[in-house]
Image 1 (cartoon, rainbow, N blue to C red):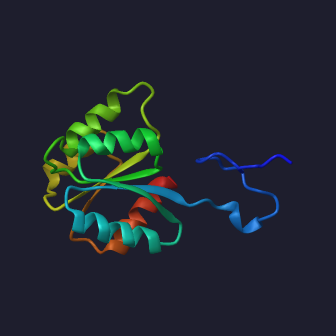
Image 2: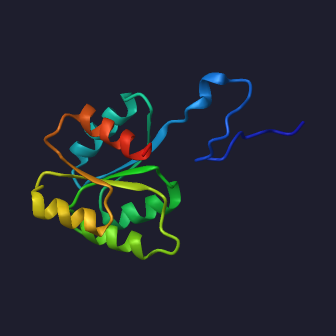
Length: 147
């Protein structure tokens, strides 16, 4: 008897036997050098309807590896990290051919108009403050994935 693993990750195909599976969850990778923030944000993603936490990374290099390995729909990316900052991560993602299909949401404690404009110009799909309610950050991530 052959084993069917079901649709590939990222596929919109759904098993015919389960009509409730028609809407797949949006996969999320949380990237921040603060373990406390990663865990808290990760927990918020886990309990938010429509989102699925697929991984965490503590720095830019780890983020790039995780993005290529896990292929998330959305990356919640901090700007200030010790190895590669968020701008460097965005630049490297843009330089990959073909670029990953993920949408990047900058989540930073140091947002102002200039930083936000630069992040969007560098390829981010949106920016939110770390001070925002976790549920609002999750809702923004869900909205970006479904645009």
